[in-house]
Length: 112
Figure 1 (cartoon, rainbow, N blue to C red):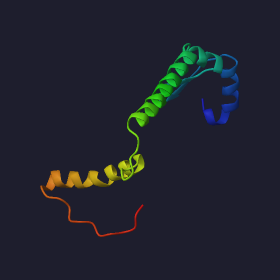
Figure 2: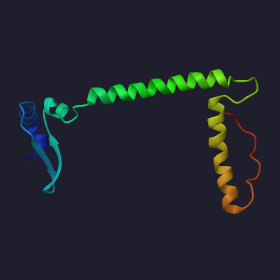
Figure 3: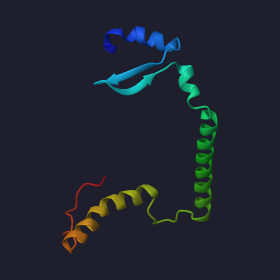
Figure 4: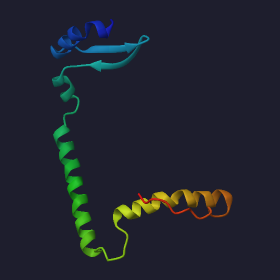
């Protein structure tokens, strides 16, 4: 069945409860099912979402505790600056590992 020509009818059938097998070159790829059938495939969806949100809350709490224990000091790199420094120097370290000597100094240029 050519899905592009009959998409409306296919969606109507799926929403009415029919399970439609989608194939390519006579090989099964996926099933098209109603929303209700799809939700029944993940019965613990609400519990999973709650666990994920609880994990995010725990990470936020860990970050707050870390900031209390390790406050930023004047002159230290910010988190953004640390990430940029790591990104900018990773290639230099790789170059030195491969060729056995550091890259020549960079010419000064515009900052990011």
